[in-house]
Image (tube, rainbow, N blue to C red; front, top):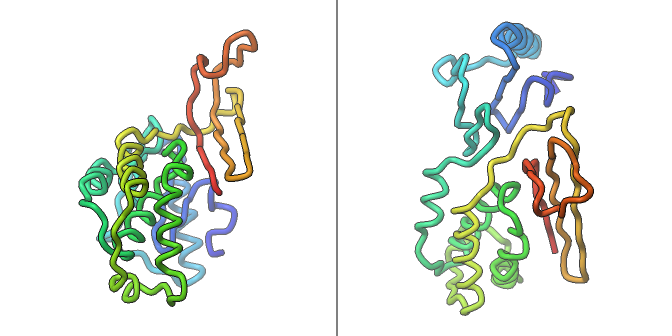
Length: 212
């Protein structure tokens, strides 16, 4: 990779989008210089019109990133919550792809969305799973699937802001599994209190994951 050890230390890369970050303005200037040097060495050229510098809040790949943490673009959430009932496999695929991108801040997403994922898998059975094929597959969601659709939209309305890892705080890992799925929540607390129930402690969410 062209940016080498800068990745995930001072730069986040998503396809052709770069997010350069630092704790101070001076550090940011140094990182930008290092990034530009690396890109020049490998023959990459940036488009100045698509570059923004010295921001304290940025909208990047559908996420809002600032000093308080990482959240999701409210307009993106609103658009998904206003989606009408799904009538084709293409619409269901679009909805699941968009919400899956946000799942790190959607607690219990995997379980809640499972009926919709099962329906999509069934709709795609025996097809090549292309957008054209999906557009031609009509759906009539069951009551359970409609409830899942509305429940996912409710999760979006209460999506959590992810905080940044802080080495001075204590890491908390909570996991569970059954025959039908698994779940994992990673948070941090200022000071773990053994005598206080886990749900009553002040957690800062780092990530939540799950699967079937």
